[in-house]
Image (tube, rainbow, N blue to C red; front, side, top):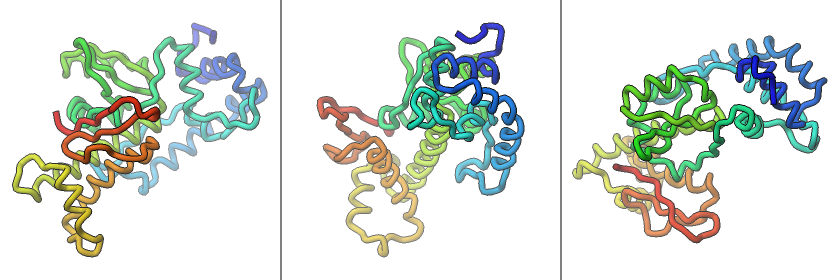
Length: 267
């Protein structure tokens, strides 16, 4: 185990954890220690460029950490030089040392309403927290930093739920926050184009299918976006078909084809 006197997010602690797991050598650790600060400054400078924007709510830069630095170096794994030291294996290794559960998230298992209404987008993006489940009075949140106790207390006070952190890769969390809020925005805009106050996504799918791209008016783009998001998540998860159509819930077969999972679009 790494030195318990070190902060769990410090360079020393993380390097020790990776060394003990056989993922980096002492020479690679020395490289990280020597160049870490300069690489971090470069990453922060790159992140601050104007093209780093979000289409929903503006740009919210995420803090650059030593994990980001290590990932950017693209090191070979000491125990398996054919593989690179990526973000996911780093977080899996750290969760063992931190004694927190690791969670690789499936977007099709997340509840859109829970993700987009429990925590405001700006707060979620600034602190990298993603609500993923509620059960027995507890709210499970995915985060790359399970030691952010003040943030968890704020969430607990606002939601009146006990917060249970699980660890997920930072880039996954940023992508899911961005995509889910953008998808919700597309849904809300699409609703305004239908007489029914709650848009029927089956009608949305049919509406888009029956018209060629050239026939769709410019102001219908958010309808296309809404449908595209549904299918993009499916393809990302290597799902081959959507049984039952799209109608408030997306039915999706798991990889073994033995059970149905759903993505709740409305509570």
